[in-house]
Figure (cartoon, chains in turn brown, purple):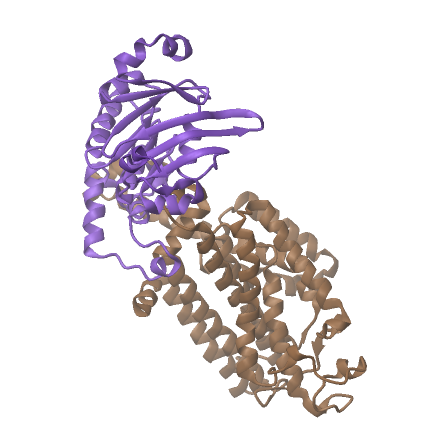
Length: 387
Length: 250
């Protein structure tokens, strides 16, 4: 059952992309660790972490694309799930600091000592164990998405209204996490991490491993998403995106379908956040900023929503552009981002990847119909080529 | 429950519904027997579409009873449940899934387990494949099976939708204006197809085209202002003075 699900997920583009990711997962760390710093092929550690960060963004965009591109749910709160996964990982990393914090308390993180707390809040229990934190990385975003989706989809909240309440959700979480007495470090968030799984988080080797883990997580998520999209379930998702009430009259429980996609997507976003935090070294409530979620939408739109490769390409392109642009003209980045979104919406509604695919498909169709032995097929294919 | 309800396939009694004070249905009573093909006519705003909305669970009635197969209370169920019970609906405007191929449209409509995990791990069996191919032949779309539904002509979309209803294997089929926008030849073919379908299940057709209804040659119900005005053969109904005044005469 699972095997056939996975086999179905693999078409040429997916195989090629997964192969590229696997090669990167091996090659980039090798070039970073095994070459001398003055070697022409040496990849400096800061670049490893930067690209590792891009890969986690790509995973977040892929997660959004599952619900937006294939299911029509424009979530403007997906960065919240990313941040929740990040906080779960951050809590693990805080507890790994142990007695090495400024106050030297073996149990309590520094900010709790500072707030004069005497014991660890109950929700911090278990986060000293990696397996527990890893479980929470998927469970917490998944559970919140499930509860949120349960109410939203059952009451048939759709379109703009749904987008607005996802935005409200991330804003509510932002305000909650800002409060010191929530027990998540308030305004400053969680930082000053030392170790992950016993390895120094600043070490080149750890950074390279985190990069490889990000590439692997993206590859695995790509295969899972592709499997979902190519199954009959995926066809139902597209069907309900285009004609929701028709799908209902075919006997499908639309709200269950949406809920499943939304929850899976939130879990993937959580994994992305968990890989992001150790690479940037901090997680704070700013990650819940509504603007962050909107940026994810832009990456996905630029790359091409409704394609699986699009969001990955979009996230890397836009963030690469952002890194270069903010260094050169720091004040203008937001204008450039807004302009990019307008241009893509106007001229490339299918995004970079979607437009390229459309162009290639048209060229293939044109070539097939212009071949003389296919002349009988001409009548059928004509409207397509003449488009 | 009365004796009457247990025999009929669909039983509506005293159904009323109003929208913002406008009475769309006014104590409507209506019975469909198993295997019956029934035509419904009536002027705009007579409540034809509202009646279908109530049967399929899209709208809840303010008052009245709606029973399917004798004792299933449809007013307590939602669209998906009612569809799974075996009531199929064809809309006025052809609604097929445009970004799916003809084949996928039929595969989605096929009467199989429709849960999240059942669809996630669904594999096309030989039996399902044969069934889809059979339907493709019936609705004459075999040559276009791999084309996107968006690229079909208007008439072909109507036929695909009828094919999807066949795939659903409903016991009761509600068809809203199946020949709107069709050529005369297509209209005649559709009448043949509907009669064919009605051999194995009950069909309720809402239509404005009197010629088409004459082609069907079945019992006709005329609705006006939310209740039944007249019921009987096409000749009987079209000679009824109330019907002429309310509908045909206009």
